[in-house]
Image (cartoon, rainbow, N blue to C red):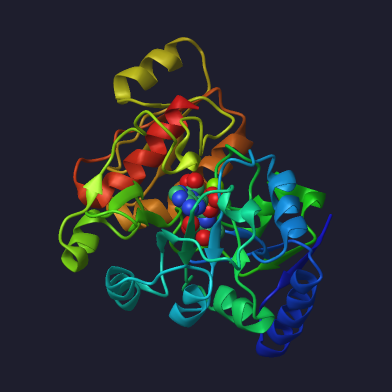
Length: 325
Ligand code: TXA
Ligand code: MG
């Protein structure tokens, strides 16, 4: 197993970051915390290192990676063009859980963009991620630090459970506060297109850019965001979105059932997980609950359908994908 490096105090952090930066410059892969989920980082300028990330995850080479940068100056080095809309969004939401898809620059290797003409960039807000980016001085290609199609990791332990020896080093920064992946928005088109909902909501984006197109399903032709394949973010245990009647039915069949509720409805005889009733609080705890329920060995996870509305869009998206898994 790789060393899991804690970040408890200032002198430890400095030592760990120096080692991680050295690893990354040498073409190795390092898992690190962000404010959304843990990322599996490699130099976005090093084709062999990026290929190691794809191999560790078992990720199809056709699915491009997000490049993590310290800020706007560093983002401009990996894109071909930095339009006004990028500047406005970055000023409002960076560092933070918003990924911008832009025309790619020549610096990033083909492996990162899956040979495409665009590159996804984001500046993460987590202090450890920021410090790592500054310590290594590299743009870091970093998908979520889990095997392809699994639930993303929100703790260092989740990373180890999923990737184990496939990663060279894990920096433990504690649980990720956001809990689900960043919002991805394509700004190579007008109006911009939402490719993946996240904690930066459509309402928040529209306050800055006017209108945003929300595409439900990838249309025919080349996928705009190949990562939005249907089977994704799924726990090992079958998950369904349903109400208490379904739980009662499963209990009658003598099944061990987990019940995930945001309204606090208890059902006797189930493994209950009560999640917060606000979207951000719910998102922060969702993946940890799914990882945890996988470990309990229940036969089914029934999740109470989340509310309608823009602030719950990202949670609904992840749950629908998990249910299809
Ligand atoms: O919060 C996050 O975004 C986390 C943390 C680690 O930053 N990262 C993450 O990466 O979720 P990943 O690889 O699991 O998801 C990246 C998503 C995928 O859906 C991918 O297809 C899409 O971004 N993407 C990457 N580059 C793209 C591009 N050039 N055009 C369109 N979509 C792109
Ligand atoms: Mg992922």
